[in-house]
Length: 158
Image (cartoon, rainbow, N blue to C red; front, side, top):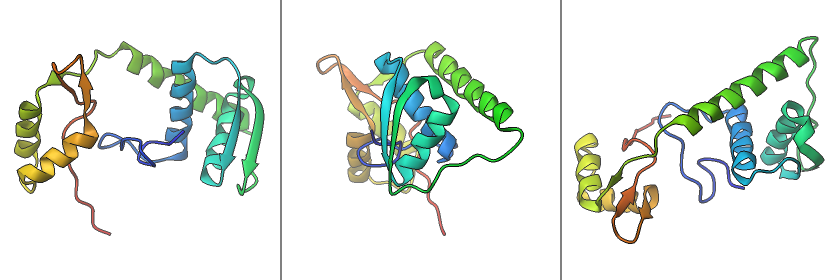
């Protein structure tokens, strides 16, 4: 699977950090959606680190863990059990909150483009249309588009 902001996956909403724990939550979210009780993880490099973290937090869900070119995953602390319990509860709580939220709104392409351009004065119409192609999902045979997150663009300088 692609993590948020990687490959063909959408980027996270503004304010959602790109932390290992966030990616562990992504795995848990996919597992919940697929209704899996147990599965194997094959992780390469960064994916192996995240897979290792997942298997520590949710060990009963992982029947095999295969890591390729991943650093050895070790947690050293006399508080490891408390840390893992805390992280597990935080992830499960986040999934409960997400499940209780109402579905995102549906708009026409014209409505979404107007909202996007109003919120982002630096964009022109052509750029806005390109962003909407990637950031929206068509619903119900031409009735509209679903936008799963707020329409904001941020500029970062390094």
